[in-house]
Image (cartoon, rainbow, N blue to C red; front, side):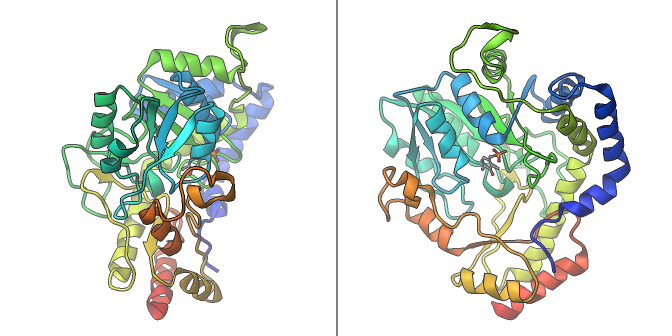
Length: 378
Ligand SMILES: *Cc1c(COP(=O)(O)O)cnc(C)c1O
């Protein structure tokens, strides 16, 4: 069996370091916040090259806390993509605002910036692009549009930690590491929201998330909101705060993993390159945009008989997954956002996408077995 993701191998590789980190926390007697969390925040800030990182309880929390910290609230509209994990839309609703959907660019599955103009209203306050599968959305056009119309930009970077954005078009040869100093996904807008969910490229052993920003005021406001609207315990300066925080065990585990992230992402790019070479005449393989260093949170192909291909792979003992089978506007909970047929590129992608096994501990023979199975079917 080749599962789509295998977290057991990673733990086996890092066992002695992780076990030591866990023991350090258990013997310290401090379990929420504290020095481990503070150290992780500064290490993440160093890695991403931003002055401020605020950890919180999940990627979903990071999204809505960031929106509120930017001043988005009731009566506001936030433009986003229908082809994402539902948390992106939930966050907009939790902030009290209304999600407004634009269709995706079928080439890269990210929101299509040429459609922004068509949904702009006097209530539009922000754009929330999602760097889907680990590839940065077209931020140059998104930022230019936001600037022209005075909008905020929050990046959903849950799937994109370590992805780079190279506006100058420095071409990254497929399968190679990033040797450029280009900015990180999640640091290109007013703020970026990241998830530390176990399956993400940098995953905790439980839930977690964080906000990265260049703005001291957004960071300060996010910190307040995540801690019951208080700066000093039992004194509350903001209404409707949250209890959203990272625990020390997760922070200590993540501090072990962070130094490996670049190498793991490079390995994912190498695996993607092997898949590309083995599959490009059989299925539509992912397109790497010239401006993006894709970090392959998912390796997602398109095939007109997606469901039959997935069933065949399952018979062969190969895991796969559909990210995502139903675009947001066709979900029963979100029917009011747009009618069926209104966002055709997202609807077509939802019918055809299939994610293949992808994680840094996938061996060459396993990659070869996946390629052979897909080739036999397709
Ligand atoms: C995982 C994910 C989230 C939510 O993160 P959680 O930590 O699970 O709350 C949000 N957006 C996208 C695109 C994601 O993939």
